[in-house]
Image (tube, rainbow, N blue to C red; front, side):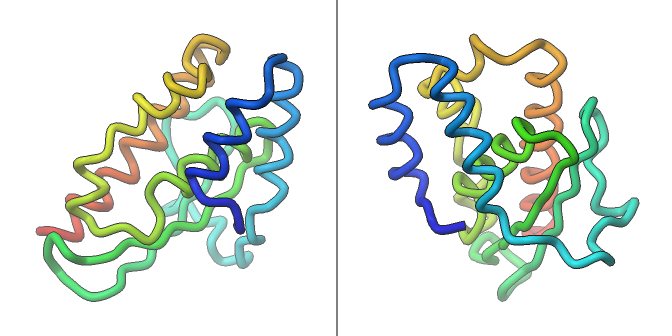
Length: 141
């Protein structure tokens, strides 16, 4: 994925219409690097999502708060793939301590996504973010 979180926020801010924002979210999902077949495992599947979502976590260094976590992900739904891409832009490449200190929900709110996602998708986003935070906690332990 080539876009940074700052790029994504800036792009959302210039898109006035929600249809355009949804299209952009779908385009973000298309920028995800493909997962290797073995990453589509039960261990990588995110529980609590209506769509199928997989997150693969790789650690760099550690264990400890400075351990960097790198995530790759995928979903079987276009908009959810975009939400995965956004979650990766927020968290991937950061230390476990930074991940735990980041309020991803505030970013989703800032982008207006919280108000425009169905309750089911919002629950899925929560499950995905919680999985990322659990991986960060495990890296520190």
